[in-house]
Every structure is written in structure tokens, then in C-alpha cells.
Length: 324
Image (cartoon, rainbow, N blue to C red; front, top):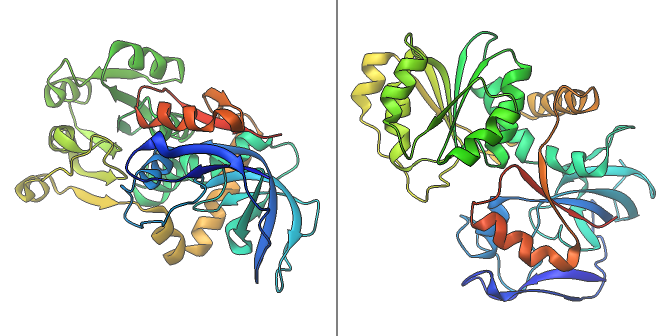
């Protein structure tokens, strides 16, 4: 079978598509014929050694996938050969065949395409869990999204609008902000050109109800300052490459709730909520309330190019590998 191989985690130059032996599912594992896989920023971190869990080379990157079951390992009983499934593999998804733990897969509902199903693994799931379960976003609240043009940020625009929030999208240039407007953002802020705290105070004179921070760096503190009393500030990533240092007196004075969302830990600690959230998310995709902005489609032989594009953070929206 063909697969993208990472042979060196020094940079993305060591990515090649090559023939490798087909994997065999072990106990409680499922072998999936991959039809679509999302290319996410975290995949580039894993491939460059920047993720908190190191992976020895060579390996095949790729976490989120959708496809059909072609074999099941000993003890695996939830799925049968031919079933449509989607879920998270951590690594291995950028290949024609991938091994996935049975517990990490869900049946793909009738009518949900593979390219949409693969996005529910982490991109939309992060946005949905973080806003509905962690931030407890309410209809009518002001939602500020830092890094709103990226994969998680653009998913959060859709989830926020579906929840009835007023969405304020923040990004680093006019082109990105125009993209956010096409997704339904009510207001936009260029934090590379404007004083973010002042801009948000003007847009939210009573303070924002929720801030979703995908970026970190110098933008976190002014966004926290723009929250209203009791506002919820949710950290989901540090795309700027810098972990912000927050003065705790802001939390005291504002009665703010600063919290974080990490996908694996949330699932481990909240399995029932995770399942309910994924079912609700799938329903929103099926009925058209969420329309994912898939702005990049690549074939498997273009997977290295897709990874480099996503790593550069110049890409808007979501990127998918099509292996159907």
C-alpha cells in the first residue's frame, strides 16, 4: 500500500510517499480503508517533533480519518467489514490503509460524506467541546475567537453561530478577516494592525462572554482584559508559538474563569459528554447548520505539500486528503 512517511522530524523535508507493507490489526483494533483524512496543524507538530508526545521515525502522520472497515482484529466486535467509520488514529491516517483502536472509531451516519466525517475527529470536535461543554456558550453572548481563520477557528465561527452567539473573529490580515466574514462572523478585528484590547472594548462595551484562544502569544492578555465580569477564557492552543503569561490580578478583578481544553483528556474524563457532543455535531453537519470551509483538497501523492501548507499557517479553513 502507499503511505506518507516521515523519515526525519527535523523538518517537513523528510516527508515522502512510498510503498509500505499493509498493516494487520491487532487485538481490539480495526483496519480501515481510508477515504478521507484531515490535515491539521497538530499533524505538522508531530511530524517535526514539536508535539508533547514524541514518535520514533519512520512513521506515517495523520490523525483524523474516515473510510470503510476492511478487517477487524481479535476481540474487536463493534464493527464489521464494510461498515463506514470515522475517528482518530493519532498517527497513520495519511495512507491507503490505517490501523485504529476500535474504541476511537464511530459509525459514520448515512448521508455524512467522508470528507465531512473526518473533520469531526479534532477540528470541529475541539471547537464544539470547547464552546459548548467547557465555555458553556449561551445564545446572545459575545464570542471572541483568536486565530479565527484557521481550521479550529473557522470551525468555531460555525459552532458559535449555530449556538446563537455574536461572533467576533480576530485574525492577522484583511484577507483572513474577509474569509471569516464569509463564514458568518458578525464583527472582525485585525490584531496585527489594531490595539486588540481597545478594539474589543469598542465592540463589546460590556465585555465578551467567551474568548476562545487558539493563538496565545501577545494576544491572550488583551483578549482576557476584554472579557466581561465572569467571562470564560478558554485556551486550546498556541499557534503563535509562545505561551502567554497572564497577570492573575486580571482574573481576580474580573471574576474571570480561565480554563483549557485538551481533546484526549476531555474524552477520558467525560466519555458520556464526548459521545453526546459528537452525536450533536454530526447532526449539525447532516442538517446543514454547519458548512465546513474545506479550502484545500489534495491527493495522497500531494500529502507532503498539504502538510507544508498547513504548517505555514497561510492556509484558511480546512485541508483534506482525498483517498477515495
